[in-house]
Image 1 (spheres, one colour):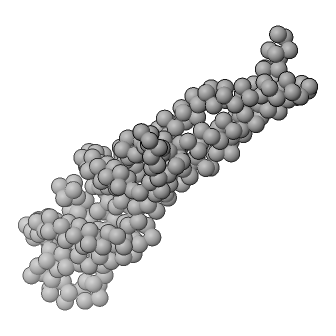
Image 2 (image 1 turned 180 degrees about the vertical axis):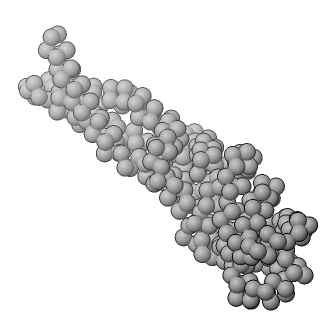
Length: 315
């Protein structure tokens, strides 16, 4: 990151000092300007380490990962859909496949009902009930029971919850690659709800570097330009440095190198979640469309009822 930031910081140093002291900076010998640049570059590792440590010590107050993920998914619904489809692929397939078994078993019960009630509408109406109950039962099997229950040799628990290790890896992979990237974390730190606090920490770390970079020329510059303007330069340099620090973090190679660590961290956190919190990862997406899945089941059951009636009548 320090290597990637060198060009940005050099350009920032040049712009800030030329804007503040155009005549003084342009008239300064090349050796003097190079010396100032060298002083700044030499201090970059220490500056980066100090900023990183300061932010790391206060990361819980500066960054809300859950809110960050939620906000990012709200702003990118196509990613939310993909997350839902990829992580919940097995569960969606179960709903489709279980329809044949559960629907078939419930459908068998409609035959005695049809024979007992002499009406052509019995099978279509019963089909609505069968289709509705088929998808309703499938959804319950996916998420319930939340806590594990033993019944002899059988372990009863929601299918989604049983897949926690696998789901954790899938979820972490998508989130680490596209949501909690280093660039997005930096963006959130510098432009999120707690950005004022982050910027203040970064500014406090960078301000002294202006004095160190200028070195023995500092008193002369203060005398020539006035302390007030000198302080403005320090503030400008610090403020613009905050925004410039995000640029190297957008580097794809830099993000790819660190995505594996983020993926492992998220996967471990998800695997450590208690069952009820784990269900909260995917359950809200199902709840949002649950009525549609159940309604679709009812409509398919209605159609199946008419087909069943046609077959019985033809026979």
